[in-house]
Amino acid sequence: MFLTKIELDPGRRLARKYLGSPQAMHAAVMKAATPLESTSIKTRGRILWRVDRGAFGVTLYVASPTEPAMAQLIAEAAPAGADALTRDYEPFLFHLTAGQVWAFRLAANPSHAAPQGPGLRGKVYGHVTVAQQRQWLLNRAANHGFEPLSASGDDGDDSVTVVHRERPEFWRNDPHANRRARVTINRTVYEGLLRVTDADKLRTTLVSGIGRSKAYGCGLMTLVRPHRS
Image 1 (tube, rainbow, N blue to C red):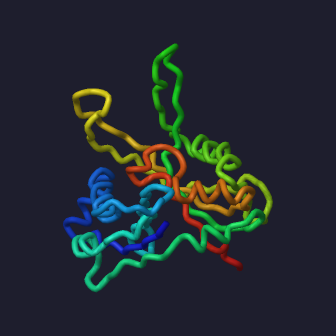
Image 2: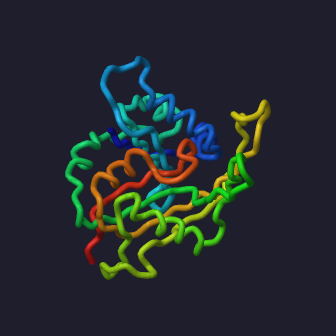
């Protein structure tokens, strides 16, 4: 696995196009991160991406099973003179162990499927309140190999913070019908502290993502050393 970081320039036309449409960004990322030729090397994980916005600017993160070729995306959407920062993710993943504490950031689409009756697919509904969105992640933490921690280092009400929410809408071809369908994502950005409880499960989480809409900028969790005041 590889983890890539690229600064984007919202003043550029194609950057605005990609940032304004999860489907357009998905296509650009897949073009950059999908190998041109098949490879005999067994890979794990999938292509995940996330856009972070803040006082630091706009940053695109991409996790991919093979090293991506980002030259075209940089030429189209990055600031002049910028370059991609790509790192081999495997050493970091290998050294994860139970008991470690990390600060995390995650963009996800918190949702649930409501039963529609015998033999019918459940209808997917997004969680819309901050309380629902927080609880969605808290409910899934154990199965993904971690436990959230409060700022004091214990499990508490401030263990998960929702720092940004948005509802991007776009059209895509419906794979279950011969028509186009409008898609709405409850994209929710979480930050907090976590303790590793199952390193293998957390590795799978980092390379495979959490929740729905992974193709559209959701599911990628990244870890950094916690800030010490």
